Length: 456
Image (tube, rainbow, N blue to C red):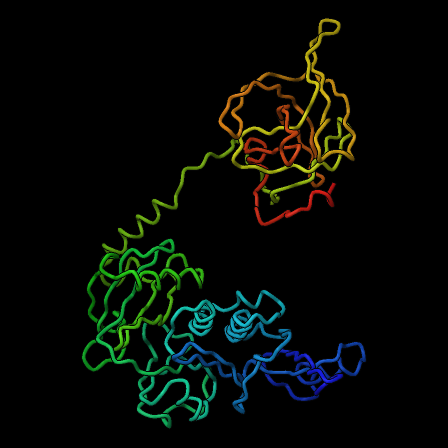
């Protein structure tokens, strides 16, 4: 299909299953949209997750096919996941493929839907991590596809939601593959003398079990009777350690057992990332518990808790708008700095005085700072103030005046101590430090990438 000599953009609508050409839960959805006359010109296609076959070959190339063996999604301009919640693993695999290819889709929630073997493989592949060539399907793929992706038999088949080596079978030929299932991983059988269960705790390798299957068995799981030996991290080699750590990080399993197999050419492949893995059961529990204890020592840090703990911490970014209602000042951008203890505001013409026996502090708030040209810079007088010594960003100690002031951020009013400083050479006239942030805010540095000139 063409428009003015140009190929139409291709848009895919993804559903759980094929409910028919006229159903609004499948083919009828796109047809109604197109008939409305409101849709942009495009080649609209509807696919069902239930019908898809997912393949990763030995070269690392990947593709997704329909039941007729036609490649899908590689030509997409945009993909809309209309209905996928009951098949999250398959939807997640499509999302991994789309992200790797740079194809936009909605919604991003699909990315985080899959947690089992099938979706893991595609997340690993999308990050360039070597995985065993695999076909994932609910029906028997064509003979040609199986040969192209996996090579010649024998093959292994594994249930998508299997564990501890249960349900794994070795098949001598293509014809032994089942016609239709609830979902299988089909892989080439790799001759081996064993595999590695790498202990990754806190995204760091702590050791591994080298596991060898019992005679007559095809799986190396210790739960299936395999023998094992414990290997320290240093005995594993940098390539295997790096592969296991990258795999755990990719699927975001901070505590994991990463299964790795090495083929006859010495190339390691990730078989699976097991969330949690065995720690207090199985072989070498003393070694695993010791390693897990080291990890926990690293993770459990001392924390000072306020006597009166706020129920909710608000998230703010690197910059935030601040109001000083007592001084009639509003919408001044402040820099949030967790490296600073005290907060500070730019002030000029600071002097102490006395009237009727009461001492006071006068200053011009914000006066002379280049970023506050459009703001009112009032002459202020306070009686609630003090002197304090602070260390600036260069490590130099300075004596400053400190005042108590009410400030408002995002509609939340609070009273805080803030020092008066000459900040005219600084990017922001206000600095919010740890003393102010503690118990009130969590800082996300990805937020508030603000153009100063537009924000003032």
